[in-house]
Image (cartoon, rainbow, N blue to C red):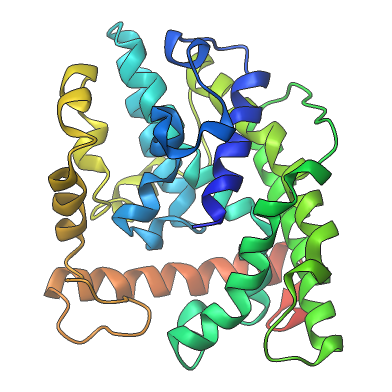
Length: 304
């Protein structure tokens, strides 16, 4: 996946900026090593699992808060390697909500509002993938320190401002399939927007934790999140099991999707998975109304 490169690049930026310097970060091989570098592989593992319902708000925020609590527990136990590995994994749930290539899709509606997976990929992939070949256009990143919660919320707002511009360009062009290069300046701005937040996230993990949503929502919104299985493991068990193929298979099986695309092929899901998907849809409807419409003033298809 070309989007993997963006995850590696932003993980690299976050590690470079963070005050927290666990041994795993000090030994990090860099974004250009690709998935052969353990922290890079961890940063994209969530896509391999396919737990996409937790990659977007509001569930992504609950996932971050749950995961951060497990990182804090590892640090309190002196298991710094487990904490660092889990921190790298959790960057996926910081970066995906802030990605312009994702936020612009919310101006069309929800993923399942597209008529088919092919229609979704026709507008998603060209914009998502183009940045991988143009990271040299990202200027030297200024990474100011700041409190993660405030920085995340400001960056999310900025991502939707950039996403709105991308959506408007698409509408003006009147093409069924976008040319990714036409959105490159917005994607570069999105990288600059996200990078400081990743560094702030690492420091928040080390210095006190993450608070984005009320605690009572965290357990409900992560009840079937398969990553909870291994976020409780210590470093020894992570090292023994995390990179084994059957671990990813087991996490995927816990979703109850049986290889189906949950957005377009829901027949035959496990009953618990179907019920949880309905809960996800309700959470997204509430979030769109409260955040996109209520706070940012956006309606479906653009500014409300």
